[in-house]
Image (cartoon, rainbow, N blue to C red; front, side, top):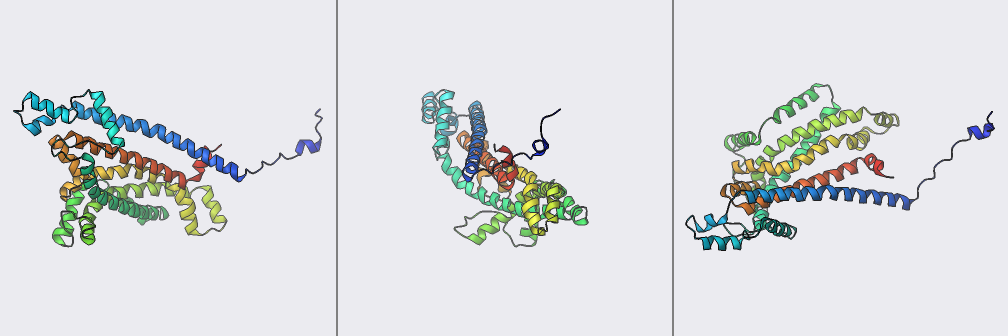
Length: 348
């Protein structure tokens, strides 16, 4: 027979003592350090591997600036001098080491044909693409969130079906088709927007906006469709969770339930797709910049590839890689901020 008394058998377990503020801060700091180290452990190898492949593709192309600069009849001495000028007479591993060292100092090399620094050329053209891609991102996020929330709140109604049908249709339209359609409607029929060209905002803000709005709309449609569909899916699932029912029972206001509780937990799928769409906007600018005759980042990379200007092609690829990695890190930060429960699971 057990010798435990009734009091001993049914006495409640001691309640855990709440952690002090300093202990909580140390736990948060430890979580932040672990996240930083894990991010570095992923980003650095990906960056090194991507840049290595980028450089080796240029080296394996067999292209040489001597023929373009001195002509096909260039003497061996002239070819050797040009190769030495661009460092092409060095072993491949040394060329890669010098190129990587230049990347960390902002030196992406020199164009083979016009002798202008690649970083300077990219800086000039990137402002054009950033204007279009930035406006497209804003349009995509605003309209995508509005349509996704509307479809989720009106689940099963004709509004939900209309939004779903609209996003399914527009997601299948390529940007060049939308670009041509916008030009026909707004430039040829309505005559309210210019069809081509670019001016910096410092020169004429109104003209700048009128020139980038159509290419931005053409690029944003795919973003709108994907964000709306993913946000609807996440919100419908979130609104069915028990904590939403508990919030309703506690009498919390509908906007608080929607934007504080449901949206924070239901936005994860939309954020994940947004992380992939940000770099895709820069890549999609190649088509739209060609159609709208804009001297942007995409046009620079395309014309340089056709011309065989390897340093510019390598430089544009490096910038694109950096955009992809930065956007991925930023999306992870936003996801962690919107979903504190994921952070708590990582804490000791």
